[in-house]
Amino acid sequence: MRRTTALVTTVAAAATAWTLSAGPALAYPPTPPSASTAATQLASLTVKTEGSSDGYSRDKFPHWINQSGTCDTREEVLKRDGSGVTVDSSCQPTAGRWYSVYDSTWVNDSSDVDIDHIVPLSEAWKSGASAWTTAKRQEFANNLTISQLIAVTASSNRSKGDKDPSEWKPPNASVHCIYAREWIWVKYTYKLSLQSAEKTALTQMLGTC
Image (cartoon, rainbow, N blue to C red):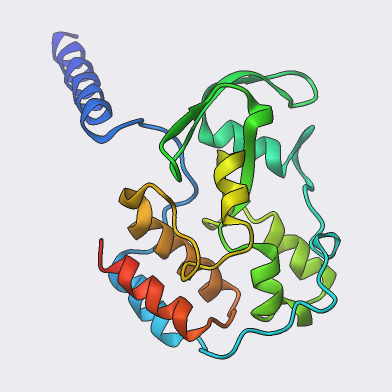
């Protein structure tokens, strides 16, 4: 019993040390491949001039769909990415805090949180999704199995808009490595193309890893 107690104490102390030294110890989207794997994936993607936005509409990427019980995709991300989140019978958050890694900001009200698509829907459309079925676009817009969705401040999400990494990077430079790996993972998973400037920016961000 003493040995077990000592082990629990040691683990708790280690967790506390990690929280203090590495910042908020919070849930995050699924961990993307390593930087070396991301570089290999990036090299395999087709580089071409970005397609047209003609015909694009967010409605062509149906979201947020039901994921579990009464929870839709947005609500599942709020539960996953938040700290101390509680929800009501409709899966609406009744308490919680969210740390936006894009701009190193805590948010205490879920109405001030946006769920960002790492690769924006418009960007996907211009990179190949215009040729997809509606069912595939729905999967893309609600995919929780890869690092495509993340809870961030509404202000940072709206600053990003539909920009790719050559036009916008998170103000918090410490997440440039993982942001690039996430972006590449999504594009690789869905075989989306990228522009030359986008590839250059991603390569530079991987260099911070």
